[in-house]
Length: 95
Image 1 (cartoon, rainbow, N blue to C red):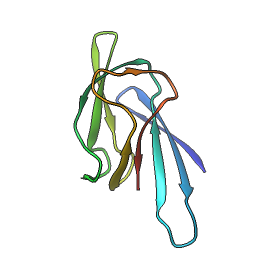
Image 2: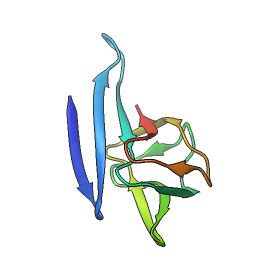
Image 3: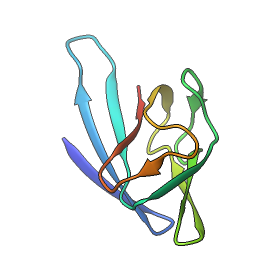
Image 4: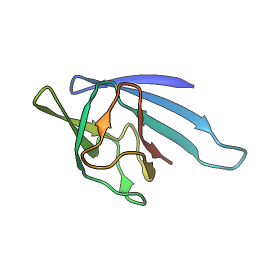
């Protein structure tokens, strides 16, 4: 299933896919804007609630928060502070 959500002017692309019978659903958080990763607010293993800020992207001299689309646990963060972010790039995975 593919969902889209608009938050604070940033369109997050959410792909929810069960990984198998009895396994957790994962949600990939993809960038919908190019920029640089300014700051990580969460780490792998952290529990998040819906709308918690996971990271902050700097683009066009603006700080754009990337929020958790749902509650869960951060399973993977695919970028590091200072990395260039391209539109469509997977930034994090939530289980």
